[in-house]
Amino acid sequence: MRMTSTLAVLTALVAACGAPAAKTPSDPSALVTTAAVTRENLPEIVSGFGSIEFDPASQHTLNAEIEARVIDILAVSGDSVDKGQVILRLGPSSTTGLDLVRFRRDATAAQAVLERTQRLRKDGLASDADVEAAAATARDLDLQASSLEARTGSVSMLRSPIAGIVDALLVEPGDLVAPGAQMVRVASADAIQARIGLEIEDATRLKAGDAVSLQPLDGSKKAVETVIRSIDTRIDPSTRMAAALVAAPPGNGLLSGEAVKAEMVAEIHQDAITVPRQAVFQDESGAYVFIDDNGTARLRHIEAGIQSRDKTEVLSGLETGEAVILEGGAILSDGMKVRTDGAIREAAQ
Image (cartoon, rainbow, N blue to C red):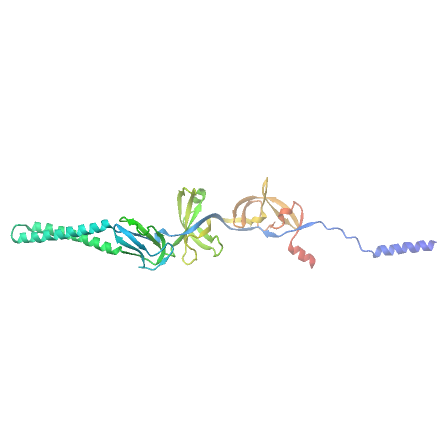
């Protein structure tokens, strides 16, 4: 009986020594990604929307030199035209025709007076001064008649002064146009600019020469890097906005009327401490981030500055070299254990 008890005790001891130790459950941890806090020159971006337009300084407006009637229009708005290509056919109005007849009749009469005065001078019945006065009058009236005849001929075919685009047709067939009236506007295809709407407070922060990135809204073209040409501080009554006029370099693929977004650099914050924008959270107490403190998430309140594209400026609360948590930060709490992809790979090895 005693022998049996001894064997049972020995068997139990052997079994206990050979059994594996129970695993202690590890603390739960969250999978996160991190990024280093850095210093950089951070641009302060002002965004706006607008469209491409022809540069008014490179547009040519064709005006009527005399009163005329539009006979025919040989182009439409948006057409490409060559230098010298006919755009309009014009005919003199009835008033212009009457003026031409009257001017030529007056010039002929003045020439007759001159010839009669010259005959009288030979007979001693007129002085040299009389001849000179008659000659001046005849000459002036002849110049007026010839000028009107020349101008009447020049506007019969209205031609483009440059190779470009018909930006606007301001008349229709049959219209009677007054002297000096605008009829056609032709623009150079490469002379374009962007007009970008600005809030009033933003217009005061920008100036000519500031860097701009223009991006077509359809995403079909790459961004065009350029500069502000000028700021138009007049307020558009329909939009209540000012405007930035942005140079568009030739050959960029942008077309007049195309919608664009502009990112304009108002200021550069030199040597700013920055973190990725997605690392910053907000609550009732202000902005905060989580930093990775050797595998433990630590909540850190910060004073945030400007946001520029995908970066946020940090005015206080962080130092360069610290690691802020990005993905996974929304589920964290202060003191929670965290792990990164690198930690997972090390554990697997």
